[in-house]
Length: 278
Length: 210
Image (cartoon, rainbow over all chains, first blue to last red; front, side):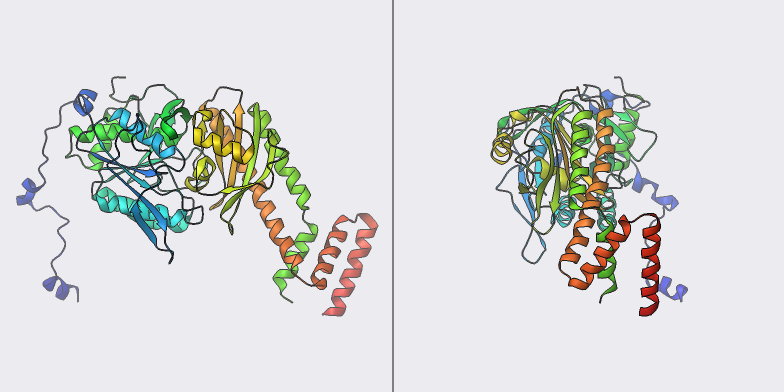
């Protein structure tokens, strides 16, 4: 039976024949030592699209600048999620804060807001999934997710979405939980999970050799953009995440060919407790 | 007669009263306020049917007026905390004019800073615990303390919800179910010889009924 099938259906080429090594030749030569200068020196985030999956973004805030696209995800009449242009802006302030942090690190990146807040609590699970699916389908370079769900019924679909993003070169950067609970998607190995450190340095990041939290970025006492053009001081892993996202945008703008795996490797090699100069 | 309803009735009979739960929640917000040397602390519970957050316990500023007040579950800082299940600390919230206005309209009190943390029990987000105008400087250790404290509050909230559900079953039932609940409550309160005698009587009744 097997032999018969093999004759008619070609086996997927998940292998590397000897004459195909050129097919996977990598574009750039990596330096002998990957330094911060090589990784992000002179980088601005130009050419990179960053999606803020959050409460919406207040476009035009002096710390945010322009928002290239804004959509909202809500639950429609038949309980199906609906993606539509966002007319409301930010319903909390949090998304604006994240966008401002990303902008401060990667001033020339493109910002896209996907608002998943506002459907009320009951719609929040399906809306979160639909928002993430939209972001992955759009092929954004980076998705900043300062949110999570504790519902195990969504864990499987979130896991598939996270893996799908990873293989399509959409990097998900997700907040680890400050609390001892099971939540997703930050626990998945295909995302970059971020917790807070207490240093007042936006360019300091640390690799954590004891996962599931993989990196620590600035998350305590951060001055951020807020509603109405204002600025406030905040704390939480949800603000460490956009720091990591901004740093990723810098690396990718300078090295757009990097896969999520390579990006993580560069983050590791240049972390403040590994080879970073800080 | 549905066996589950009888069980719920017995449970409601021996479980603590609504007043006891309120006292527990109130003590939680009082302790939260004391730990963080804060001006106020509140617990809001999610009303899933209305998709709104309801103030269940408040300590300090607003304690006399806020309990029972309802706010949307999907907007603002509380809504964000509930739907994203992530804690959030704001050092100076008064700079946010929209929040200040909303807070002033809804609660009559505008805090300068706040800590907002989701109350998570098993897979559910039950509500939000907030600590307003903390006097101590914020550290990550405090964040962890707040998380541990929120877990305790979540267990209390879960008990409160279970108690209310049992009480609802009781209210919606006939006199027979209420009678079983009353008997369970009275038996539970008895001690020593009286309890032993009551149990003997019940066993005899059980034998007659089988």
